[in-house]
Image (cartoon, rainbow, N blue to C red; front, side, top):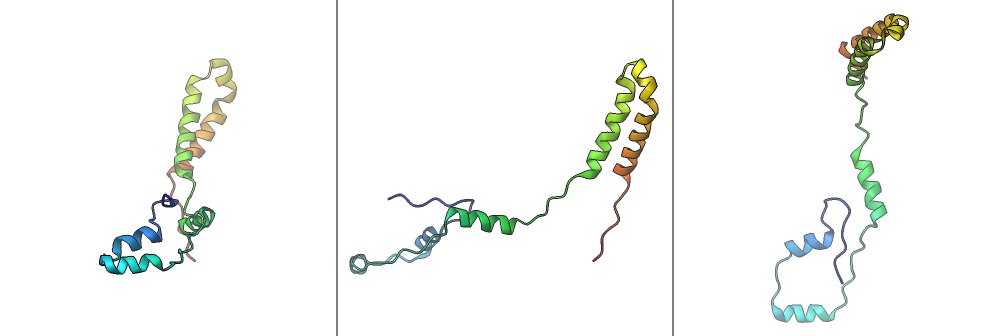
Length: 114
């Protein structure tokens, strides 16, 4: 029977105890083999995934500053790339959107103190 593979990088309890346990003499191992040893209950893969999700936390924050800077750059480039007939109609809204996006990307957020 092959050993059970674990989810993630953690080693299972069997592999840790096998590495840390001292080797017993042959006479003692023969007596130990005849006794039934209860196998430790291993957590299911679903339990390990749920534990991993709980410990991971929710530290993700969307990169709004980078998105705003990129939007400002795209609005500014669009004012040069669009044909003259279209650019005459949307030139000032594009400049306004580019300015607002650059301002939003360059300003610093206020720290939230709780």
